[in-house]
Length: 348
Length: 273
Image 1 (cartoon, each protein chain N blue to C red):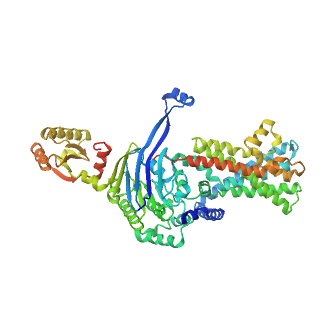
Image 2: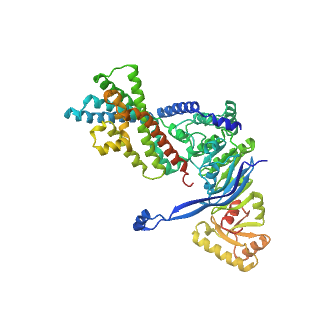
Image 3: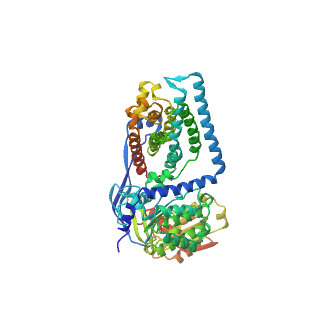
């Protein structure tokens, strides 16, 4: 099978003007321009197959948007090769646009003052969608999430969630082979988030559309993506299935504890102090356990441990002998903390 | 391969059809902000009336300027109002570039498989310009009658052609001013500055000193917004070469401004998100 997106060793550098401080510095800046180069994307390669749903993750400023912009043809890579749908995106941006769909953040691409259906009608003309495909899609969207009742509403009267929903529908309207979704669930409530996830999953499955999703919400990743790509500081640090990542961390357990009633009213600093004390105590008790750590997690003291280094029950027993445990929950490590660990450079 | 053929066929008919469709939708949505529509129309009429009043007072005191009679200058005035109508009606979205570039909203125009300039400009039709157009027609008709210019199909055709080529100059000037928004932050001032020139456009170029005459002809060519094209009708016996060239120059200037605009727009890559 041929890949939809093929990226080979792309780099993107930006020239940044070095700014001097103060008024004097600003005046100097006017006359001598001193540039430094920023490597926003550093030697990234990947290949994405038709129908894949890829989560593209990374902390703020990691180079996610820059990569997406290169894939959509807005930016030209400094070096390297990108092929999307068999075409080089930046040499023919307009043609590349025929076969992709984009939803960029919270910016609606629909006409603000028009009912959604009118926006869709204009898109039908722009993308020259034939009548049957268009009708089928409208009915399909309605059957899927009851979009029919939104069609007559104008975009400016919509809630953020409804607007995002319509923007996603609009990006699938012309049956593109790839859709780029940049943080589609940002700022939405829980029920809207799950509705949007459902929609994306259904569209990906039934239409076989390749979806590239950037997000900071690990719920999105858990619900949608089978493959994740993580970049940080422009470099790719992970590209594999999400199961593999979890199994790598499968031995990790999180124990969340509360000792007395005071936690509810305690200052964060005091709690952190308590966690720190607990950590040094546990470290002294279990010398071999490198991964053992304690931290504060929303009024809980959370102890992270790795089963093959030290058994969870031993740790709990040990803590119990020292302090009275009032409340406790056990958790497997979440994707969120896995990603956090990767960002923090704990594993390579 | 099929897709390839499809995109090649995107010719004038496709764009005309699309434009009509977007225009109708835009008008529909304009009507939904009724108060806004009424107030801005009234504002436009008042602006024009006050401009005309200043003009009228001037001619109460001076019967002619450098050999140009009241009615001749009135003709230029009406002509210039017609010539700036297209830029106001059809190219009004240029005024939002600097804001959209600043907020990052401009990026939404970059993902459509149609010409970027077309797609951006087609989004807004500014109906306020229509009031000005009607006012301009009235002024021009009055002066036309007083100057005893024959009212034959040929003359009307010449009028149409000269208004069209004159309008190209104002459109191009504003395109260039708007395109600065892709590179600099304060381009709103550039636009306001450029738009001010329309006030100079309504006077015969001969009243300015040679330096300004040169600037207004060759550098910021506002002399083509009313003076040169209308010489065909007002002073048919002393038509200079530049008048004949004005349609060609207009098209060339427009093409240049389009290229600059596109260069700016294509270099745009959005803000971080």
